[in-house]
View 1 (cartoon, rainbow, N blue to C red):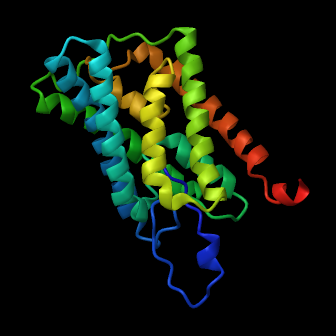
View 2: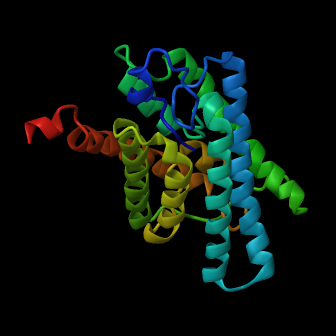
Length: 257
């Protein structure tokens, strides 16, 4: 879901060294089709993990706390593996707000995706999320498409999405600014796992995943009528996160202090 693509300053300072790709670092420029495919597969796998583990949990126990624990743990492990695997290919965004935030920060010639790349990534992420939800339902013998009836339109849930998304953007782009993106698989997965519990919305923080989860009437679903509010708050959260990155990690901040 989730890493920005900024080149390590340490690697840039050693012309004779051959940079080794790490999740979140600028990957070798593979064909755009391959990078979009990585975003499709990664987002599909992520949603399959989220939805599938939710179905499994509800079939194993009636305790909602245990259901959420199982769902969150599976998501943590699955997301960490996916970032580690696909980060060197596409940056492992799996999330339109991460893609758009990276385009925005790099639009004046900096490192990051171009508008053409973003236009390929975002549809791939959305299509992957839908495919992942359908796949999870198929694996558990559910109807392949059944619109969720899980209403999530309450105001406190929308606030939770702002907080969850702002924190995610702050983490990813803060790691990039601090040259710590090698820790992205663990850091991002850990944050999402924690945000399952400390946010009222259980931290969707991802428009594509939100759309995919509307296609399944299971534990992890979201009613289609709640999508607009969730996606709007996720976009606001992304803006808040970028503002926080600019304030906290502004170039020259240490020298100015």
